[in-house]
Length: 164
Image (cartoon, rainbow, N blue to C red; front, side):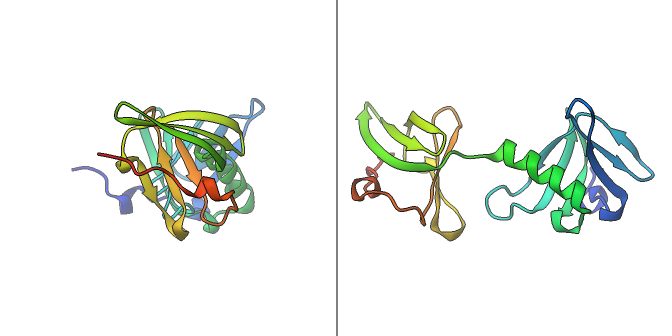
């Protein structure tokens, strides 16, 4: 039988996350061993970003951290930094144009990481998340955030009606 989440949960006191001289992320779990060059994944990236963090090495599932806040400060800091790099989503600061091309919409926007142009297929590529923010997923799977709290000019608040 497969491993359950309960079976793969790592006790916070047993885990130490650290970086080596090459800045690789590593972990040590008391009684289980040490893994080098690990990656972190969120099980629930939008709705609960501080809980259920999975540690992996290639295809190997090392275990799940129930709550980042239960970890020691150093481990928590390394994991938060790694998660921030992996899950950074450019935030749209201004919508310059949206034009329809065949059955898609081509968005030209300014983001907190510079100007971007991307293609969106239909309304199913818009996700509402906590707090009324929205995530737009383009045809390549890249994500862009439109924050409810961000002040944009009036034209930027009129995204097109998507067909689909």
